[in-house]
Length: 88
Image (cartoon, rainbow, N blue to C red; front, side, top):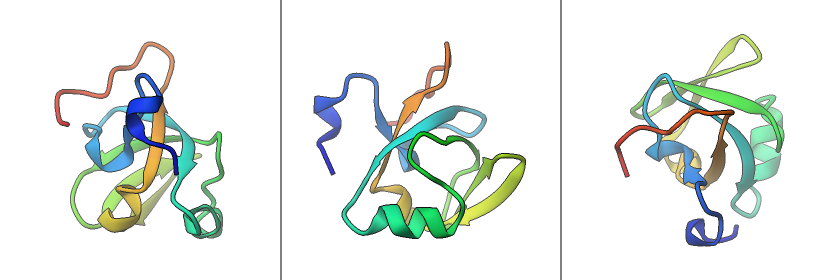
């Protein structure tokens, strides 16, 4: 996975605030396959519903639990004019 500082505006999934959305852009080695098994592909829009462990994300109208460990290795880019909130 590339460094967060190399991608202006990208954040780890576990660093965004509930209610904000992002487009999945990168993940740790081996994590892309795990995300795909959950129905989350690179380029897919996700919204954080609830922080914690597991995090709850909304993907294509479905809510999924994602471990905090996995979420820390997923980079997302803000959707449209969205900002990620103040955490992180």
